[in-house]
Length: 316
Length: 300
Image (tube, rainbow over all chains, first blue to last red):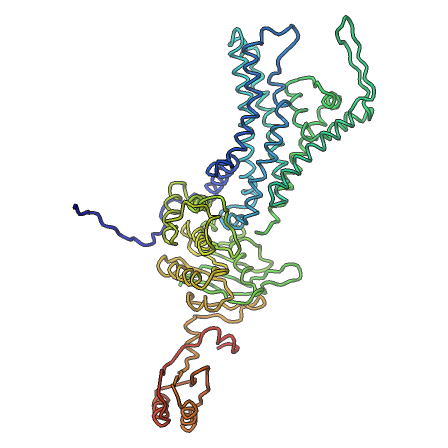
């Protein structure tokens, strides 16, 4: 038998002599924790399932479009086009809205439900730091998600083109456009769910409320802009003119704004200089561009300020 | 002793309700008890010192700073709330590492500190289990650990023994004593349990209806009321009579006899009275009053 030379020493309590990085470190920690919580990292497999399922669902259209562009792009009839960067956000907007409605409230609701907030507020953080940290964390995830789809689509379009470099040279403007439009989508889908989550400690209630808000407003807006009369002029078997008289007449272009979920899509259409292809977008496009922009800003600043004020008044 | 916390004419009102009314006191190194019944203003005072509330009037200063205005000073404070405040889905190790970072410690240091503190509070064996699986006593230890993980100068404990069984309470009080004595971290202990104050605190501040009614060293409170207790097996009444005969004021106290204000001369007289009465003596000696007795009887 060998005898160990090692000895155990109980050093007792040791005071911390290392660096203290104060408020900035606290903000960074809050941000990283927000990202991990949103993605279910460090939690059970079940907690990871939902965010990654959404990630797969939002990426799927981009992958399919990219594959389509590189395989059947050349075989399409003249005039027909596969959906591209300008259409992607509209295609996945519903999924992004549901993703945000379900995942974002967890960042605020669980802290209030478990009453952890009182521990944050006695550390070098203000209520604004806390809300901003959570907001930035979820915004970062959403923007990565929407950009990832656009990047996959871009790769498909570039690699599927006969001359990739020429394609890139001709279409480079799509890159800043989808970056700007993606930021606009992510801003709204981050701010509204978090603002709603500020009023309840139950994630399910916040999620149902946000999804309900988007569903109700899109339904109401579509009913209000629905065509009362629909005339189609066909020449040589081709539709040359479509005329629609909305149910609500000239007010339809304003009433179309009721659909909150489409607010960033109107701006995306403006950025891509794209003509809307559904009735609601066609009606809103009749307005001066300033109004959809102001309407969108209202839905960002309003809930954002409400959220900040809510946490400033809240006593842990 | 250096002053850590300072209240100057500190006032806090919630609408028409006055929680603290122009209180002035200082808290220095060591373990200080904030004692008082529910609604006395203890929790309000702690929240003012932590910067969770803004004073209505006066000031609450910690280490010379006002924590409501200067959040950086909070990096040197610890707080253990009375209520549940822990997430249930994460492990104690992960939670403490995170809390250390939120207090300003870099990640690598935060991990080491979390492991050290969990060892000090006796949870190192279960640190990788979810907090939701912990018993009430273990949850209280995690609450204390998160208050200590960043090595604060002063830690404020709000009713730390609430909800614990007698064994858990003793363990928590022992941990608090060690934190104050061995770790060298100053403690402000808010409680309505005098036993907790008596067994852990050096100093005491008694609050009632938002005002300081008494303050001083715990030993001072009890020394001033020194009493000798005589416990006899039989001849209880004869001992009482023999003491009265010698001019000693004695009162029956539960199963014993209490004699107030005893000096050297009185000890001789007590000895004589016991001998004369023929009583069999079980015990005789001074015992300090418990704080409960002092405050029950209207103060020292």
